[in-house]
Image (cartoon, rainbow, N blue to C red; front, side):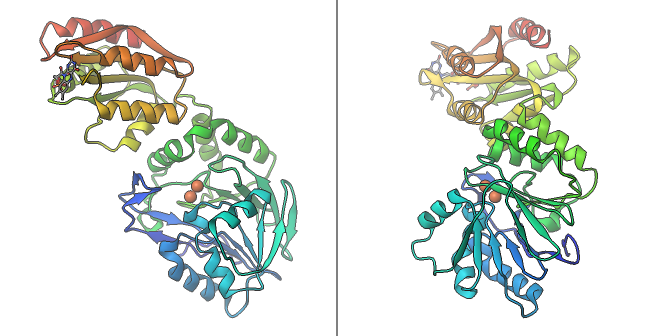
Length: 387
Ligand SMILES: Cc1cc2nc3c(=O)[nH]c(=O)nc-3n(C[C@H](O)[C@H](O)[C@H](O)COP(=O)(O)O)c2cc1C
Ligand SMILES: [Fe+2]
Ligand SMILES: [Fe+2]
């Protein structure tokens, strides 16, 4: 399937459906795409190279679209290896090419590539433009919309925003069924989530532009109803909950804490919670749990005490949330302990260090097995959480 933007803006990226872990930690059951684009005009510009896993396929795509011509520019939006790793091979093949980046880009090139063949370099600043003939590229820096050197590019004649990692989505393009939100949200909160303020800055910078197409570095090219995607990004990057509901994250060693957490789910539903989502942190995808914690306005953390600490999958989950700047949510705590329950207090301490996290005063403490009388504590906790 072809994913070209227009006659003159061609898609030359590739799908990667055999990658085990994206960025060394995220499962990608439907693969991932590394997008790369070619603008054909009097002068030819490539927007980003590709992961080293796909260099050959990408070069073949490039050559096919070049039809015997040579590229004049390689625009480097982002130096992360999933996009920039093939720079060396590209410059080797086309030594007359000019690398376009900002000052931070070139510092990183020196670090990633010890002996990049000599070629011209063009250093651009925020707002600079580069004419290719009838197409004009306008560079819009987006520092820390993942990395410090990130820049987006607005093509003025066809009104395309090349958005770098922003508006990216997990999933190979040939697996895309039109459901954008789920895997774009998992991508956003896990990859870019820490940098909400910087995403807000980028949204403000591009707001005055007439954008007809958003072309990210991963996932589908967005053409219709762009407001919808921009609204999602506005919600996500301002840390506002997207949906009303409770996400229950549970880490149980032998299943007793999980029983209590499941009972709490039923109680919350009976009390009118709009939606209750559940994750078993010992087995389910951690990145999806992080996504759901950000999606809903309320969170329950339920964990066994483990060697005087928090059972480690929960400890990891809370560390991920802290890392991704989790904030502005209401949280309830369920703990289990057999001789000296400590998970509740320790989870509370970790949550208290987060911004604008409102923690229910009561903690439901289960002693070893979940008993019918424990329901009273869960009922009270549910009331407090939903209040
Ligand atoms: C390896 C291990 C370490 C534990 N450490 C503690 C502990 O330090 N303090 C405590 O009160 N309970 C401790 N427990 C008991 C658990 O917190 C919990 O009460 C018990 O595992 C039942 O809950 P579960 O089925 O959800 O795991 C430990 C259990 C295991 C298996
Ligand atoms: Fe990135
Ligand atoms: Fe990326």
